[in-house]
Image 1 (cartoon, helix red, strand yellow):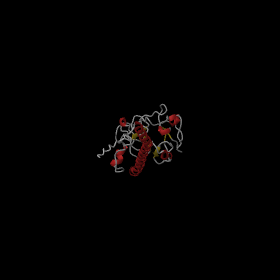
Image 2 (cartoon, helix red, strand yellow):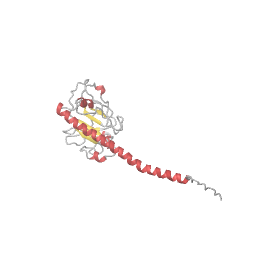
Image 3 (tube, helix red, strand yellow):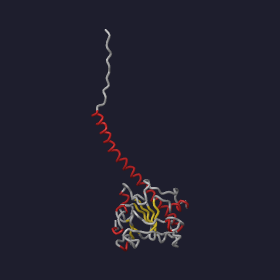
Image 4 (spheres, one colour):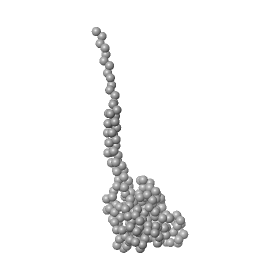
Length: 233
């Protein structure tokens, strides 16, 4: 007697099973992706902190050799300086490091938080500026200071090297190139603990100030508040 061979049938995936699988995948992505994103932010923060700490060491060596810090834009006329410090707000600090509030704390005579190139100068993480002088002198090995996110000038994550304009190089204004004060600062994405324990006056900004008497404060959360509200942080 001839047997009829059995035909195996393959059961397909039902719509319900497919939807369940998609939901599980979406849930896993929702769990894993934030963790990866946070890790990337913390990695960028460590890059920022390392860059500022390395620059602090380079600036100290530069000062030992030259008895001054590098200008923001060496040997360039005044027009090449930043025309304002838009995006960040600064007030003066008294000899004890306290932020000076009110009109007496302003670097300019204009409205609160308004600064012109006559008072402060700066380079940021989107420019070269003072890095060129450090690099040419062999104090650093990389002539660029690029933030991991490549921020615009007014971006909160734009790191800065700030100096007093009356000490900075100004070929047009006739000022002496004799920088004795600087401020390095960066905002961090995740590591608020590093911002709060850097020895600076603003617990929401990672900041390094030149040795000696304090001279400047960054105002408000992430340095983004008006100069009139600058206070001890």
